[in-house]
Every structure is written in C-alpha cells, then in structure tokens.
Length: 86
Image (cartoon, rainbow, N blue to C red; front, side):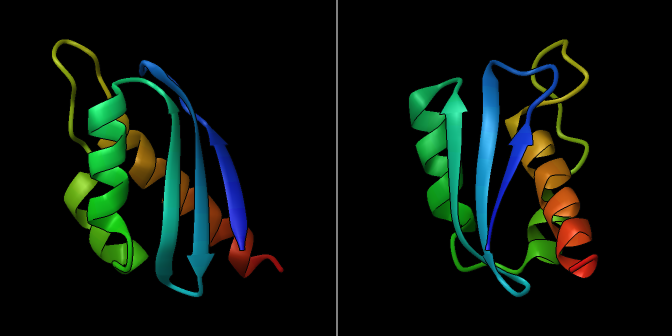
C-alpha cells in the first residue's frame, strides 16, 4: 500500500512509501539531494519498517533538527499508524 508524507525541515518536500505489511517495497523522495535520496531509497528497500525507524530516527542534517533519514522514519511511523487504522 502506498503512503504519502509531507516532510518538514528538509530540502525534500515529500516521501512516497510503498509497504507490503511490515516490509518496505519502495521509497521515493521528492526534492532534496538527488544522490542521497536515491541511495537512501535503495538501502531501505526490502527492510522491515521497525529496523529503518530504529536506525534513522533522530539523525540530524548539519544544524537542522531533522534530516531526510529522520523524516523517512517519521513517514514510516505515520504509514504504519495509517495501516493499523484500516
């Protein structure tokens, strides 16, 4: 199932997450650093949501209070919550 998340505090503007239960099928990051977005998306493909959240939550980018990995963790948590409400 596909979920959309509007990012906050990063160069990217949106994350589109496709989940198969607890497994990440794909992630598309709109905007931001092209290479980093593609790399992050490729790295998390096939991983469990819980594992990615644990590794990425709290990562900061420079002086910002968040980062694309941190926002991905937030997107995955929101998707998981939406999944449980269905």
